[in-house]
Image (cartoon, rainbow, N blue to C red; front, top):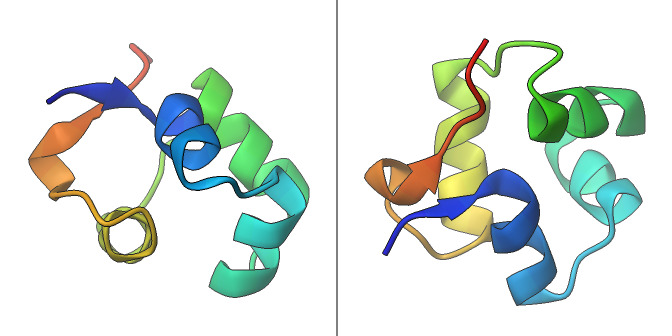
Length: 64
């Protein structure tokens, strides 16, 4: 099942601030990943997949 970073976050009930705190990044970083303004590192994508209980392949990443 493919989903955007935002949809995956909303699906598990986290705010952008909660995700930022859990990954120890800024809330702005999470916002920029979700909107495609900044690239997400493989390491952070891996952390998000664990946090959202999805495989990394399940994410639809914004076109950069």
